[in-house]
Image (cartoon, rainbow, N blue to C red; front, side):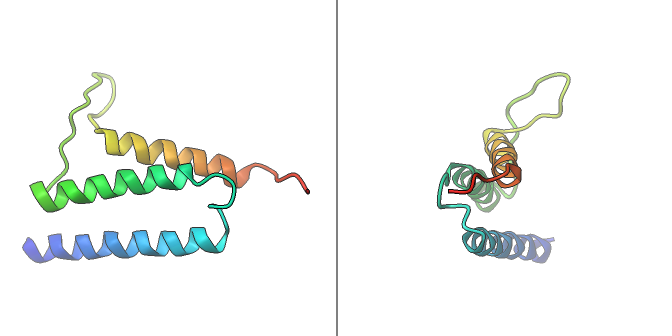
Length: 93
């Protein structure tokens, strides 16, 4: 179990690094870096919980939806915002 946890931590760190490289290559940071900042803030918050508590604590419970935490909200909003930003046609200037 401990080796799986360590593998998971390295996998997440590698995924964040790859995401940063891809986003820098497609120049998402030029106009509006906030969606990427939200994604990284949520991911880092979850990583801190996993290192500290060996898991993530979900503390927001809406009865009609599975429980979640603020980091999940940040990641979700950041991904939606980034998708809209990437899919929106760019004006030629």
